[in-house]
Image 1 (cartoon, helix red, strand yellow):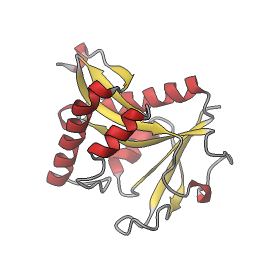
Image 2: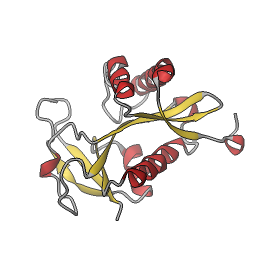
Image 3: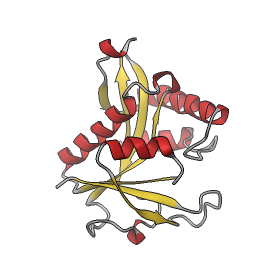
Length: 180
């Protein structure tokens, strides 16, 4: 499938997408082990249980073309960490902003615009649902994620220790995109 002929769709995943999404994340994890693990993901995260739960809650989204999952992300209102300490441009309560988690592109589709398509899909979804902002956190040295999000207008909201229980990642960098 060539990029010129690609007609991707941004979808909310259903149960029938479980195997394909789980396999796609598995290929991403294998590639990260083989190269540079920028997000510091582990074999268990993002894992099968995380994907299953996200699908059941209606929070798993994907970029699909010709029935193939090219990339995926989880979108919900749960920061999974202490976002209250961030240097946000606006003080918003949980529920007023959408949070992006585990955005990944299948290695076969790397550098073909799929990451940007996923971010654009998340922005469109957030606007449609009436969220006032999108927020997320990344490992500070995750340069590909920084490039992706800043290219879409996201700005840094500081580096913080959001999850003290994760010893391998003492600091996360917060990003936001205000939608108003």
